[in-house]
Image (cartoon, rainbow, N blue to C red; front, side, top):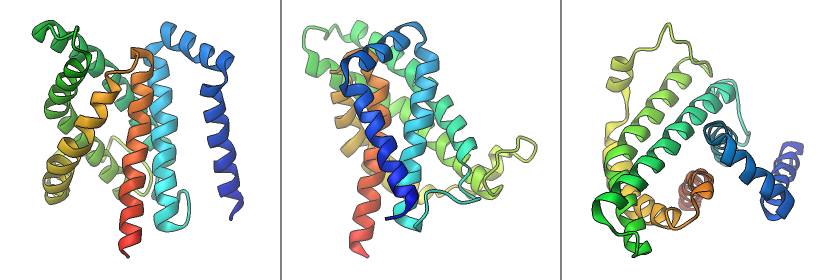
Length: 212
């Protein structure tokens, strides 16, 4: 076990204790109540990027390298976290208001998850894929000067995006997982969503390693 692994375990333990220990959990709830956008940015910037680093460690033997681009990934994930916060609020309010299913929580959560994942999620996933391509192409940086959405769209892995990301992860993972998400109190939804992205990445990475 490397020193970096020990540090990662300690940090993971600290995060777990933060939400288990009631006074610290109350601090999180208070911060989310007053600054939901900032907290959403920080949650995804830290948790989702940490998840990508853990996956990189499993696949490459190191948590990051020059091409990984920790800071750009954190900023991108933070911005995506804010978009997810707004999407959760819009879809949960809109779907509930349209279908009047608030008295049937499971059905209501499923409908919110379904419409969220067939409209907002594909665009968000593609945005994340293209931003990752740009960071990789620029060796860990995200210069706006060389940013070309058209070129990135041309170089995107459309076969993987359609046949795997859209056709498999959305119906078989994200819709069921986000159904659970929308059964949770609103202050924990974006946190759970960030953890889900880590869980899916780990499951897929470990399954591929087992196949090898």
